Image (cartoon, rainbow, N blue to C red; front, side, top):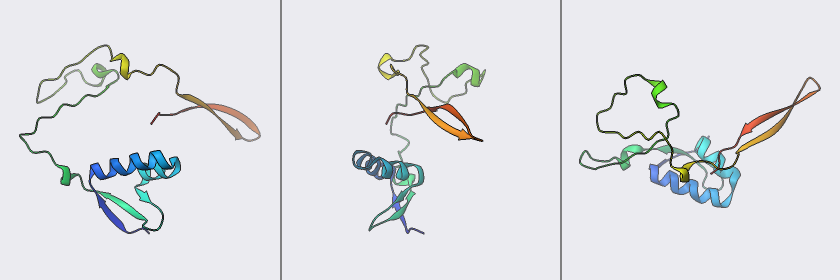
Length: 119
């Protein structure tokens, strides 16, 4: 068992970005499990309170909600929102990100679609 080490959300993102540039396997392990291997190996414990925003801090959030209106007939919010029916072309994928992955079961080979998310 690895010893715990507290990270802020910013610490976590910075470490993930560094690992992404260095070693894809370590990057994936880090973002999925929070484990850091090596001489100073540890288990990440996120502390989001260390980066808490105060009530007087303004914040703007943009999200891509597929089929937003099918989720709820009454969208309940406590502040103004804007809904754009057409996504920003800059934020839309222009090429396929689907990969094929072979699986063998009972001596029969199947090819399944594996979705790959670009980093």
